[in-house]
Image (cartoon, rainbow, N blue to C red; front, side, top):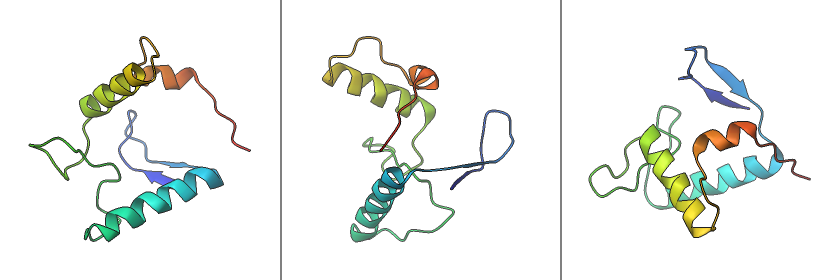
Length: 92
């Protein structure tokens, strides 16, 4: 489970993660640790890579632009974060 404290409804949530997601998350946090970052529960999970906001919490606009860029690179037109609200991926 991952704890999401700041939600749209101001109600904290526990979100289940499948094994593949947990493994990817562990790998990502290990990589950050290897870069010299002290990983604590109060640190943001996803950090900005923008030159002026490096290592700060990734903003909602940053997520929006990142997903748009991924859509461009993958040649998926009109890919936006809201698209994922209507998408279900089943990992096996």
